[in-house]
Amino acid sequence: MGSNKKLRLAILASGGGTNLQSIIDQCQQGILDAEIVLVVSNNPNAGALGRAKKAGIATTCINHRDFDQREDFDNAVIATLQEAGTELVVLAGFMRIISAVFLQAFPQRIINIHPALLPSFPGLHVQQKALDYGAKFSGCTVHFIDDGVDTGAIIAQAVVPIFSDDSEATLAARILEQEHKIYPQVIQWFAEERITINGRQVAIEAGKQDKSTLTNPPVI
Ligand code: GAR
Image (cartoon, rainbow, N blue to C red; front, top):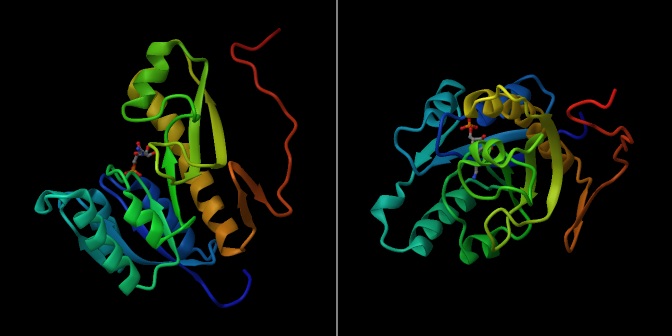
């Protein structure tokens, strides 16, 4: 733990919220020098809202269906985030595209987690796409948001093997387990102000290097 000042996170989630839960847990355990000041969902039925309420975290539901234009929805979300004093916007299963107005409000301060090894398999249903393609590895990627879909500079990735008897559900679960490790880690690097971005290159100050390689199936 560094200084007393905690990084103020807003988490945006549309679904069940297991990534949110891993961040809540690590904040509560004092592993993260961060506090979740607000959880925002576009989906009134998102499990993430229930998880946040249970942890005593402020929640807001802003339903995108109430807005004609994407920018109007984004402006409503931005106002809420600014009011809460958000320093880092964390997308955790947030299934809306972020518009330019949102990027301008939080430059290099919006991060996302994606359940594939970008730039392979951007978009939706990517665990099934990796299976259908016959890939031997997949994983997850934490990246900055830019003006493309899943194209922003990569901060961290974790790799998992794909097995011949995998289903979409078994692969998604294996990937999620890694998501729950690397997303809190990246947030802690932000809290420690160790992340620098230069074009597509993201560096972690005093980050470790692991020179091991992976082969699947193994070479005997
Ligand atoms: C996670 O697998 C996350 O990577 C993915 O949605 C899931 C949310 O799970 N995000 C995307 O596909 C973003 N395009 P969770 O609600 O249990 O955290």
